[in-house]
Length: 592
Image 1 (cartoon, helix red, strand yellow):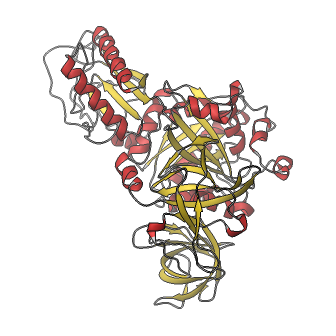
Image 2: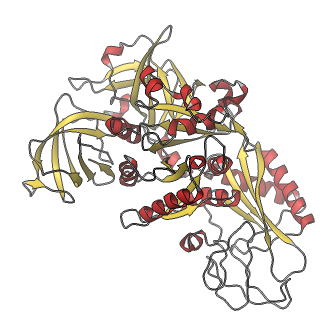
């Protein structure tokens, strides 16, 4: 593990600054600097097993917010104390949107004191009672021995507390899957969600394809969705037991929704639409071990960086390569991640302990980028990725979620269907507010800039019925006999009280990332603005006549066909083909 990762983690370091490796945290030596996130421990009288005094190891001090709680011990609490602890657990679960992590044997300042075996057993028993009280389950993630100033073994235990789902209120994370064509994206998702390894010829990916030409060519050209569930005990819930999607949702406390995007360059506009419209929480960048960084890998990496989507990397097909080839690919990735344009700290995950640490720090530090090496054929290290996805906490806190839910309803229309005996159905993401069955909303803008009234007849989330949709969740809404011809992708469904505004002309500050010649007035570009995708013309470049690669300017665009619903926020725009830029409004960022 890189030394900078150790500094970010606030973990224990060996004297001389090297990181402590492995699942046990030990401070070795007496005189060296601890290199930890907390204050240095003082020497105490006593001896350890090596006969030398040790500096006590530290974690970062406990934060008042967030879903991580430190407890020194929970042995036989009084009834009053127990009720207080239960209330505290409810708060941590609320902060983690149904998940919390307890560190037993740790003081509030982060000092790893540790507990003897009997005290630890009693503390876990109390924690189990607390979880039962709030309707949650506990899972021991790992135990670490703290070996200093004591002849008696003392351990700290890291425990995941996860609430049992109620009425589809499971934790849902959306993961966009990026990577070059033939890197194994669809195959990996097939293995994860179906529970069976691939045969080396793409059998696992067949159920993910939506079109005949995808099956024939083996290449994804459209956006598809697959789900992977984890129950309250952290066990995988997928299709391996002939489960339906509805049964998976009912049995899961946490749901990972994979957005399978295209890898071929000619479908790059589809990939961009998936990243901008479906609002993924993070991205999985897949790199083939035998080809390394090739094809669209750099473009996908650049898109994730430009849109500020956190990402982790999976090196696939390690069964086809020698160990030296895999190591060379990993070193290549590390060099790219450390370049000035990325400023990432790569973390190679080689053990379950690394996977747990990576999941926690991935959410806390935007600089840490975990790297997994695995095979969808042999199953090598596949369990480490499952551990990571199971532990991965929500990347938005509960306060942000509550603020969005208090706003007026706004639903982005990304897909439109006609279902027999149901009628018109739209799919998309609820950007803000709460949507319920029977709600009266308005949809638009139409070609003439109007908004039309409609009624939400029913809601399905992850292919199962749902009565309430909350901000940030993706779903499909049945609109009954509403005329499908009046709908198009890029529309929004909003509360009538919102009084939505539309525009045909907008301005944005852009940075031109790449252009073969110069970018000037009169250019026609395909603009991606959130879920909007439409051709626009460059009307004016303020203070300049033209732009070259790397230059910045405020540019005025005009939509060619019809007005769109826009807000002053981050929007990705992309000119097609081979013209790239990056733009910023007053509050957010995007891609051009």
